[in-house]
Length: 358
Image (cartoon, rainbow, N blue to C red):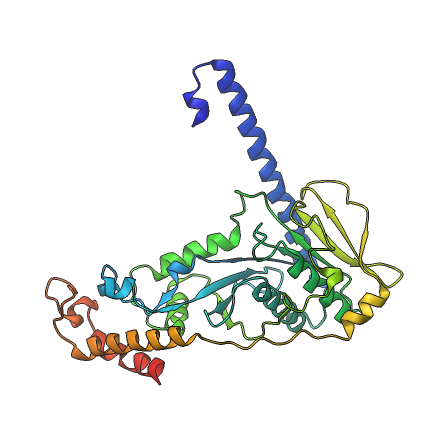
């Protein structure tokens, strides 16, 4: 540590004091968010609080064959990159909800908006009614969440649901460098459950999680993604709406005149909100209510499809050979010997590989 390297005792004391203040401050931000989640647990009809984040995709690539883990064949193979997006909503479900997204979708703000919309629908299904407040804790990154695309989409959601119970949507962010939370802890359990296991497909991955996690996730594949980025109205774009990157607590809400306003706080612990800013006046609200962004269609690139199928065919050929090959699969070099007993890898993987090649 810098403090330990300082020779001057006063410098060490000053650095330690500053570090202590820093960690106390970031802990206070966590407590502020934790208090919001506690409120939601008491009455989800008034407030639903959710936290979401995306897992490191290097840990969720399929197929994954442990016997081939150190070979260039698997490391450089055109496998399926599975993005796992975890949602923690303790006021709604005891288990986390995981969304899977493939490379046939662009993984940016439109994906995040698709998850926002779907989580809100799931909340309505669970409760039978929408909440008054919808609070989202997200990663403090402008690339996916903290931008005018997601903020503008939330304005659109409020406009579409004007005559429902929902009156505000809020975003909360921890300090950069201190954003790891309960979802990241869940991802750690996911990594431990998958470590050292042969995973051939996405269904097999979630079957493994079901078998080896104490609190395994529910699973949905994200299907509805809308083109908010490309079809965003000018009054919600970054050319008009400024200052989204700085605050750590942002809320959108209905004003009494039928407009939608936005306020922000510098920190989650800040006492005072900024002055309200009308982000959509009544005429603009009506404009939003009369529009529905285009639904984007999943599309794999031709190169991904051709290279992926070719790699799967080679993997199937290796499995069907069922015996020694140029890859070291254990002391004996046998596929069956490396599977840990029971059915051979060839038998266990024949059906899933065939399904992926259909």
